[in-house]
Image (cartoon, rainbow, N blue to C red; front, side):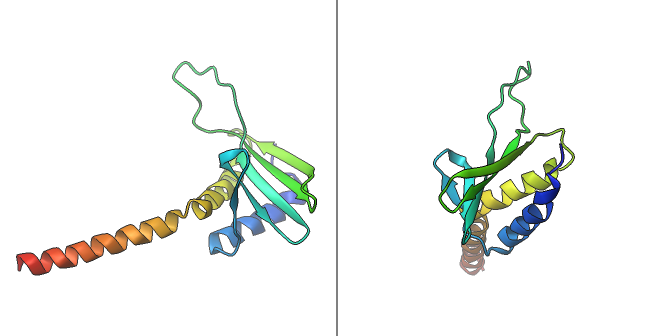
Length: 129
């Protein structure tokens, strides 16, 4: 199943705005792999969908994702699920990863580590020279 046509533009815009850093994603009550962002009259959430796997080599690494639309009152209005075999799986995974990076402050952590390592290498150069 692809992303439903009525959601295609919405998912793309939310993904772009998330990557630009203009949306404030938060962790949902479901836990660390479920995120939501609020807008003026609604909110959306994306999260890993539970899956039973009978793979003899271990749990399947590519999990399905659920995209959910909520009303202003927090009532679920609509949702869809995309799995690894769906044609738009990469698009929905891209949204989840962008939300995850924002919530977990991945880019900020990388910049901090780079700064620490840069400061350390400059100190090392002066002490060995």
